[in-house]
Image 1 (cartoon, rainbow, N blue to C red):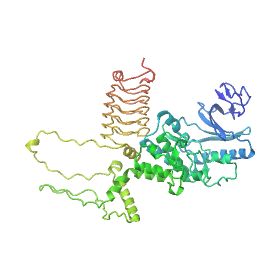
Image 2: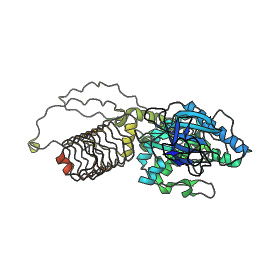
Image 3: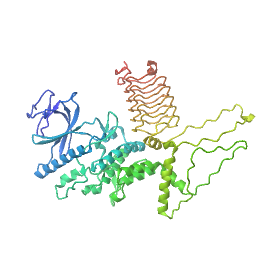
Image 4: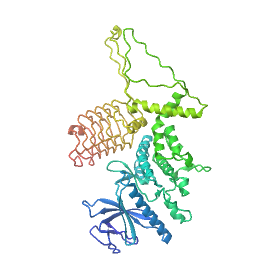
Length: 539
């Protein structure tokens, strides 16, 4: 299929063998290189097409943007050309960031302006929500942990995106990474701001999307915090599935009323509220500020409680008379004797900051601080009443979804023998993790990235792995009874000796997986299931 790029063509669709349009006679291959395949979108200043580069081996796909302003005045055309040139300049300036489409070409042909970008294969977050429903709190935090560094990079290049929204964020199919697209409304911070005396319709389009753009951006005074606001509104969309136009607003203040639409923790609610503050002064000023708030958020309640009272003195344990106290091998941690005073705001803030730093430095769940070795014990003869009694085993350690994701972001990869049942972890990246012998019954891993994970000997009864990426995962001797693996990618996974009783493998990809026919006979498969030999269907 070839698609004619002539804006006035009545029948733009042509066969792939044609070099000129059958309807209007226009050339179908731009600069003898780019052949448009289909139209993707059209906006106020241009149209976007899926194309292929016929000069390269394999004819890889790309995206061609054509300048096509809806207004016909000279002022409108001049404004459109400036915006087009600005987008090309910005993409070139950003360089080859892995989560921004690369600029491949920029040229003028037959008095038409074209911009060629890398093609990102995947679904936008808007499409994901419409297909699968809203995100969980953990899913939104994972989204922020990935997109905020990308946004911080843009700001470090003195670029304000000005049109962040779910439709402009694509989850790339190949690696499930988020890619920020559509830089048509970008603003170079060092350039002059467009004046309000210019065409109103054009400037209104240029500043972004209503509902996602903050007040100062609508007034043509965007700052870096404007992108933070749009990202906060995007998070609310991901949590509720509702666009800003579908939410209510305070008639007096104009504030978006979203808090009663979500089920999230109080602290995360405060973070989101500060992201979407109408006043720039009270909003987070940078993506790094949001990252810092998310990093400390799980500890704020416990810190506040621990600082509200005087610390109790540490008592040394009484030891049996025949035991000599061992000399500690670790350096004692310095303690402070100052108490929290609610009447002194400056002092309390300093104490809170110090406590946060101390807490972060000593969190055993995240930083793996070595524990002081126990004192040597004395071998005592047990009383007759307890002879033959079974030794007590400590209960498995637990983590909630937020702390698990936070620990992963901090670099931790070992959660062996943890009790992680019933957690909602959908759409998060938890690849290369050790879940050996962990309890993960009924945990939701919907659309998670779990490549290379060790689930050996784990309890995974009725766990939701729908559409998860489980390439090269290790399930040896795992109990997967009743698990949902519909549409999951299990290519080259090791399922040897795993219990697959009543496991749903409809639509799953088992290419190269290590699994026996006897195991698969216990599971549910259909014609969409890809067998270990790479062939689809089981009939």
